[in-house]
Image (cartoon, rainbow, N blue to C red; front, side):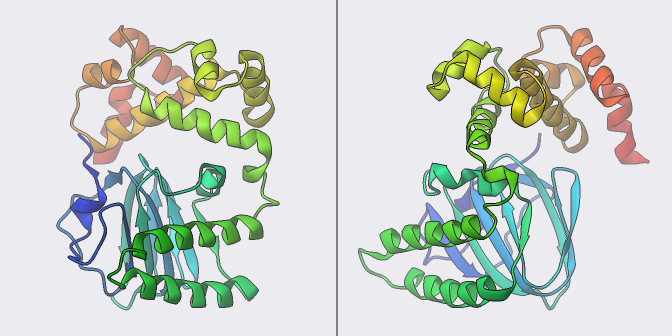
Length: 272
């Protein structure tokens, strides 16, 4: 099983609040955790110095100075970095990030430059100072500061298609799907949870993703199947059940149709 960590599992700082943490990369103690793993919280890691590789959901990204990585709950994460790495870390529970800003986390990283660089240098330092204050206003100020940073990142990159209104529906749709992967829920039920009509959900999926809601749901289930096959010891039958497939052979056929190889062959690739 892929290990999932909470903030309490990875932050060993006695000064931190359980719903959030702000610190420097070099000043945060490395916990004893399994690699790769996934989180149940949001994180922003801004590398100001150093090099390396950050792997998020099978996608490999270079760690370079002034690259800020955004990782959302449930993503498989692994990294390797140079000994001289420095930067800032923010982690926070799901409820802290304003829902209107969630499309920001569709971007794996943002390269910080120009006016934004100067702004973040000052803002991160101020947020770190506020986090270290031991008073009743600390948590409220830091929560506001985290969203303030996200708003500026959003503003700078709002021309990206991730931030178009239709994509907010897709982000929320994805979030609900990932919370209910073991269940078989109809498009109408998903639409009800999103407080929109099934017709709007269908048209949005086709416009933004080029596929129906049913096909989009299947795509996310196949992505999770890849994660489990590659990073867990669960049997194919167990994975099939966890993803809501009652028939193991049907799961295997669908997986091969979508990925091009069988689940067993996909798993074997990690040993090559």
